[in-house]
Length: 160
Length: 365
Image 1 (spheres, rainbow over the protein chains, first blue to last red):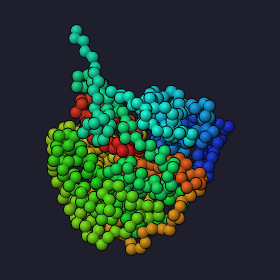
Image 2: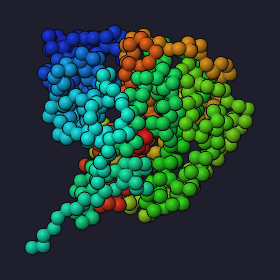
Image 3: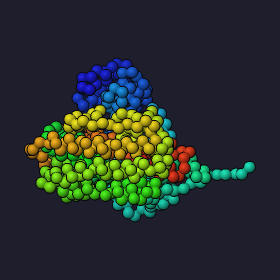
Image 4: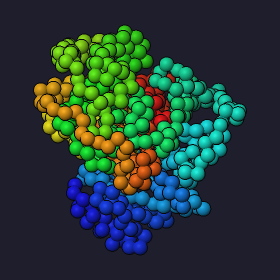
């Protein structure tokens, strides 16, 4: 699918949601930037609408930009064979994003991973726990401000 | 009335059937599984964090250590992502070498799957046979890059070395022998009644559920969903080869097994085609020693033996990636474990784990 097609598609959805959606990036990096409070509406729309049919959440990750954390959704439509990127931003003071697990259950582990490593809280997630690090771990290592000190002195409690 | 209660059993982290350090906390009612919660992180090395303090080239060896039985694919995915950012055209010969190596690696990886499935279900000879054939492929890799498991063979702009003179005859011998090997495994395993009854109709995942839960790779195709990135978004030169994508119908353990067996045959076909088409020429484009991709981001994914392996790289224009995320198929595929195991027996959990074929090096990252 050419970039022009993606742009027309994205422009259409922008029209529909007006001020809550912006188109960011150029060419292959084009993405929809969505306000967190409208995120679920727009994801649901992208999944169910005839012209998008994004039935697959390929990848879900987040990036720390110091002032805010950006959560990135890579969506894919198996029937139309097209990919769409959706982004949302949450400020460091209020790290909350609605969980997409109700739309794509595959978001479950990936949201837990983001919570674990970057500290974004996904509201409405059925089981928001650390997934890679142990439960007593302090801090979120993928934050740019994280100081990786010597952790050897800490006593590691067994989970069993 | 007799009062009963469920009990908890830890399977792993040190358990031969969890293929690495995966812990599955089983809640059991007698021998029936009520819940099977995967508990991972025992191999977490913080590779994504390490990437932020390494240069782009220094990160290639780390990718070997993700899915360590199909390292060629990991190298390929990462290098293609960075090549997309800096806009390099890879020489023809290198493209063909990449295809040959990744497809051989797919065969090697599926042979491990076959062997470990066999030993998990009690057929220890199956393991030996799988490793015997895999050894032939590892010898080939040893010839081209001197490593048997962590290759770092695929680099930005091409591959690290051209093939030595003895490589092509050895590869041709392997391709000649391989159909007979595969037949032998089919006779040993596919025709085995015990294996058939252990796998058939065990752990059924419907096509709709498989897509929802994010399965990719052979596990998704076993449920009948036609999604192979080599076909739907051909990367490299995959559009030049003629091959089939085997699909299952039921989505049970048996389909997941048969599909991988069939994929090995297709991969051998691709290798044979690539070998006959491969031109002479250079194997490396000119790429600057210190890479500074322009600020921006790229998501690129390839079809690894375990599913969609994606790299998401954010660059700020510096020498290190600003953020690097790996979409690991094993990690996301594990989500289906709990719901698939519910209501089955402990022995079936082993079969489901083996046919999902998650690899902990990749899950924990």
